[in-house]
Amino acid sequence: MASLGVNIDHIANIREARRTVEPDPVSMALLAELGGADGITVHLREDRRHIQDRDVELLRQTVRSRLNLEMAATDEMAAIALRIKPDMVTLVPERREEVTTEGGLDVAGQDASLAALVQTLQAAKIPVSLFVDPEPTQLQACKNTGACWVELHTGRYADADWSTQPQELARLHEGTAIARQLGLRVNAGHGLTYQNVEPIAAIPGMEELNIGHTIVARSVAVGLQQAVRDMKVLVQNPRLDPLFGQAPG
Image (cartoon, rainbow, N blue to C red; front, side):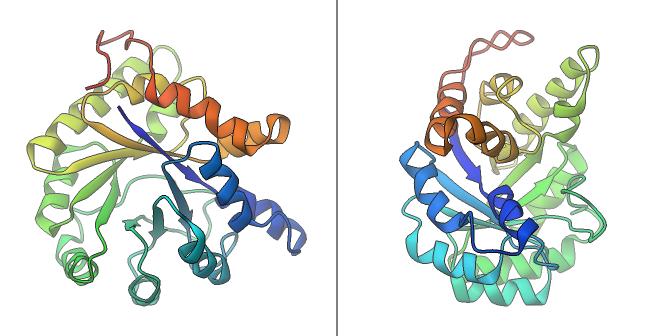
């Protein structure tokens, strides 16, 4: 049964649109936890376009589930993570021009430098996850870094139309199986919605889904606690996968 990590970056996006103090992602994280979130995820970007350093500091003090810090593999971010001590760090690619993260990290192209960062963080008892596309070469490279986890990028699945979505779902099934064979634990996220999440939640071995935008969007209508509850039902009780005929592993 997969757990649910709620990404609250988009709450900070609303605040930063007016450069004001509300809505406060720190207090909203509490509502997400009351709604059933198993963890809170934030991406502290280098340009600070939404989540701010102050948010991460306060979230570390107030989150009672798990705090997952998404960040670029830079010296600045490593220093922040070592000081804040989140429950997990997820290393992600980052370009200032992008609206949101556009794809997985190219671990195979930089596994030596990433391995040093992974070792530093995990020596400080901060488990590291690498956000990657579900490709065998990338997953093997993740294993080579010494990371404990991978988070599979579900963007291509989320963006696919009805004719190609089964193929993308199959890639995620295969990627999960390969990762687990390599001894990696598996999360997934990006672009998941109330309409497409169940087949991903039903993949055997899937441990956690990190979901943000669709929950924040629904919360405008029903409130954040209810929006999290609604997603938690789908993540933990998915219907049988229409392609693979499997319930959660």
